[in-house]
Image 1: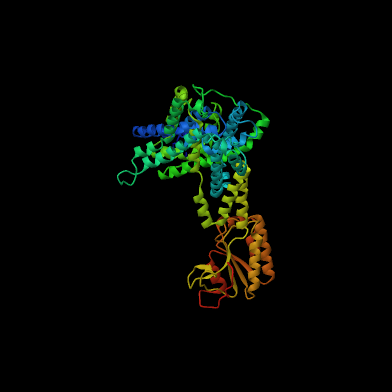
Image 2 (image 1 turned 90 degrees about the horizontal axis):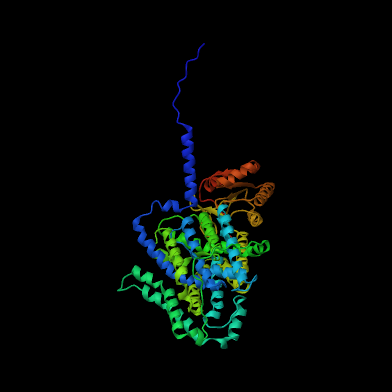
Length: 612
C-alpha cells in the first residue's frame, strides 16, 4: 500500500541563525570585557563638556598627589606620574565605573612600602626595580581573581576590619611623614611606639623653615576648600564652580611652595629638601625582571594590595554608581584594575588603586563616562612631557602636607562608635585590627584582622539564639515565651533556631533541647522550627539524627516545621525524612501545633523560665 506523501513545511536555514547567534554571543562577550564598546557608540555630545571638566579637575588634584604618594612608597616622584598615564587610559577602556579615578593612592603606596622595605633600601635602583615587579605580579593576581570570578573572597574583609586597617594605616602614614614635614629623619617603617619614641628623642633636629612650609601647606589644604565650598548668599549648596575650585588646593600648595623656595633659595640657605630634577619625556618602556625567589617574596604584598586596594576602589565605585542608578561589575572591575596595573609595570610606575577622594571629585565635577579618566591621562602625559622642570624646587614638606591631610580623612572613628553601640564584637575586630597594624605592620595587621573577624564570627554563631515559642492569642503567629505573653501546650515543645546549623553550634543546640525536654516531663512532641535555618552541614545533620533517636527512646517524637526548599532537597537525598517517621514535616508552625495539640484555645501553658 502506497503511503500518502507528507507535506514538507519550510524550515528556517540553520546556518544564518547559527552565525547570527555566534556573532551576538561574541558581541556580548566583547562588550562585557570591553565596556568602552557599550558607552562609546552611545556617547552624546552633551556629555563632552562634563567629561572634559572632570578630567581636568582630577588632573589638577592628581599631579601633586601622584608625586606625594610615590614618595610615601619610597619611590622617586616621577614614578607616581608614570603610574597616572597609561593605567588611567587602560582602565577607561575596561572599567565599568564611570567615575572611579584610578592611580596612586595613599593606602596602596603604604602597602607597597611595607612589602618592599624588607627586600631593598628605599629610593635605591633595586627598590624601584622591585616596585615594577610588584606591579606586574599585582596586575596578574588581579586579572586571575577577576577571570576566576572569585570576588566573593573579598568578603573576608568586613567593614570594621577594613575601617580599623585604614585608620591605623593613616596614623602610620602621618607619623612617617614627619621626616619630610618637619625635617626629623623618622624611620619610614616600624611599630608605632618605636616611631613615636624616635620622633620625641630627635625633636631638637626640627628644621624650622621646613616646619613652617609644612604647617602653611596644611593650613591652605584645610582652610581653602572650606572657604570656597561654603554656600554663598544663604543658598543650600555651593555652586559647582566653587566646589571645583575648592579641590585645587593641592595644586595651589605645590605652586606656591615651589615659587617660595625658588625665589628665596631656601633649599640652599635653609637646607629645605626639594624634589630636584625629574626626568621629562614619555614614560619609559620597562620590563620588570622575573625571578622566582623575588616573585615568591613579593606574593604576600601582591595579594594584600590586590584585595585592599580593590576594596578601596570598588566601595566608592558602587556608591557613586548607585546615585545614578548604574551598575558596576565587580569581577570586570578586578580585571580592569589588573590590566591597568600591568600598564604601570611596563611604563615605569608602581601598583595603583582606586582613589576615594579623586572619584568624588570626578563625580561632582560632572563626569559622565570613562572618557573623563582618559582626559586626565592625557593631561598627565602632557605634564610629564613638558612641565616637569617646573617641579624642581618643589619642597618635600608640601608633598608631605598633602599626604597628611589626605590621610586624616581615612581615620574612621565613626565606624568604631557605631559598632560599639550596635555590636561589641564588630567593635572588638576594629580595635584588634587597629592595634595589630600599628604594632605589627600593615600586612600582618590585615591577617590578624581577618583572623580575628572569622574567630569572632565562629564564637558568635557557636551559641546561636534558640528559644521556645508559643502562640500569640488565637492567631497563627508564634513568638518567644520570654518576650511575649503567649499560649503554650504541655505535650508540645516548639523550639525555634535563629541560625544555620553547622559543626560549631550543632552540639550546643542539641544540649539546649535536651535540657528543655528534661525540664518539661509532660512533653511528647518536639517541633523544631527551621524558619531561621538556611543551611545544615553534615556534622549538624548527624547531631540532629542522634538527637532524634535519643528523643524517640524517651518516648518523644521529633517534628520539623517551616523547612526551606534547599534544605528539604538535601534531606531527601540522604533519606532523613524517612528516618524521621513517625515524626512529620509541617509546612508551618501553626499547622504543626493544630495537628499535635489542637486548635487555638485558652488551655494550660508551659511555665516561664529565665533564659533566651
